Length: 75
Image (cartoon, rainbow, N blue to C red; front, side, top):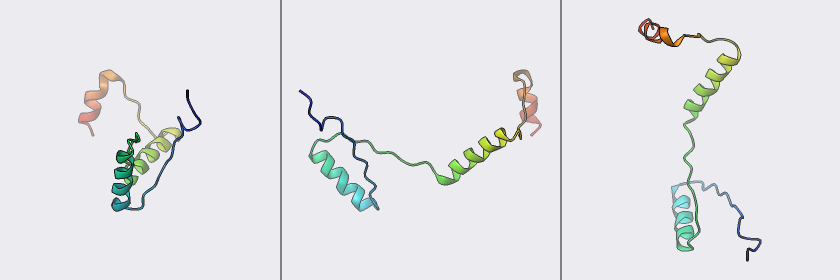
């Protein structure tokens, strides 16, 4: 029989490596499943957002598959 605590999710934001390690140790000791996410590099995210905006603004070059090699060679 399931209870009200079976599917709760807790998201924690440790402020440094020491807190992260302590939190990980507690979760492991209590045999609580957890996942770690590594955030994307902010500069990388900015480049992706800029590229998306350029496409939305029509600032892109369309290249047919048969011309891709010559297009790349011309860069």
